[in-house]
Length: 310
Ligand SMILES: Nc1ncnc2c1ncn2[C@@H]1O[C@H](COP(=O)(O)OP(=O)(O)O)[C@@H](O)[C@H]1O
Ligand SMILES: NC(=O)OP(=O)(O)O
Image (spheres, protein in one colour):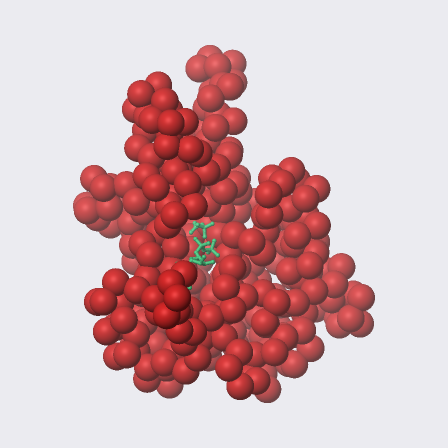
């Protein structure tokens, strides 16, 4: 087969209810086992991942900082730190599972910076949910105490929200492409990438959506396919209602119409839909797939996943 595939890992591929390092490493072993199924079929993997829960937790840990001896780290640095920790866990998990499958391949994590526009309107309107889910009362208390913004996240609880500008360029994409051409498995653009601006690559306080960053990466490395793994097997219209309908094969124009009709929740499914549309529009011969980790090994079978193409 030998397709070049960007696979974006959603939250549940890394973290369930337990945010301990051990628990996340265990989740990533299971994830790596599924990803190796794609490698067995001869595909070249370019892996990216989210960091919403992890970067939010790390920011909370910064509250224990002391301005002189142990200063708090800014958000761009926290994104870099989560790229490092998740990249370390996932690299090791991939090495272990490749070895178990008898496949000899190098795996490497690339600390990735992503350019954004410093005048992006997103800096004035925080929308990206990060960290733990709170009740409305807990969120209101935090808003009063810290001045941070909290919003309700797709019916699942209240979360802190931060600015999430659009990625305009992946700084290290040529390095990533070079590693892929050398037949290595890369993990990059973690947590959407470290948001930077200008020629001097100055870090800014934001968390880029990993779905948009993965679509940009897939476009730049000329991937054949973008696979977005999340908590559901298929995208649905009328999601969660009695007349819910799972989407299997869908064209960009059909998806645009469903989007206009408001079928996709902002902060959860909407970024994946927009990323898929952008990727397919920029690479008309390619396809984007949105599905669950469990379905990965069955891709290509009828009805498995939502497949978006022209
Ligand atoms: N129209 C829809 N179809 C399917 N799932 C939807 C839809 N709208 C919202 N969702 C929810 O969005 C979730 C994916 O968003 P999220 O969990 O934030 O992403 P991630 O997997 O990247 O962490 C799905 O698991 C599902 O619960
Ligand atoms: N950065 C990012 O989009 O993370 P999540 O996918 O975990 O929300």
